Length: 110
Length: 116
Image (cartoon, rainbow over all chains, first blue to last red; front, side, top):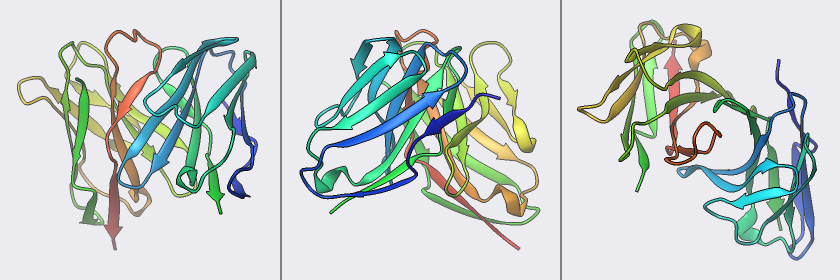
């Protein structure tokens, strides 16, 4: 089975802190994604990576950056966390179009 | 522009009753369509997908969906609801020009409640 592992299930951070969300997949997938999930809004794409060191902005990239130094690892970075970034963050990987998701990281910014 | 609309943010059914979750899409190219399920405190998992071919798609856990081009719909059904079906369901559309990358546009989600 494909496994996508997100390093932290729950985080609480203060406004202005730098936040790292880590994601690792074990199926050698080329494509990896970070989505944000908010009630009533579904999932919105933050960033997409189609290869090591390659990235593409999604629909809501403002306030976020990403890093993909190794094929299996895709990191989401909040340079200076703000309260409106309180949300559930979902990492996913894909090879044939089907997305495989991690369990999510629930971030609260105070 | 492409979009996905799920009709009804909450649906409640009795155990054993028919489940119908509605999804309409807008796309200028032939769509790839998906249904995902999210159980509490978990990530999403694929229920079923439509790419080409047969318009009635069968998925896991007894769910199926029918692609109707004329109605731009991809509604999810299950003949008999089980308590374990209580979850949030997302309809998703593959983005045009993205090939098979997995870049999807998601609907707002529908929470299914199953009453005993």
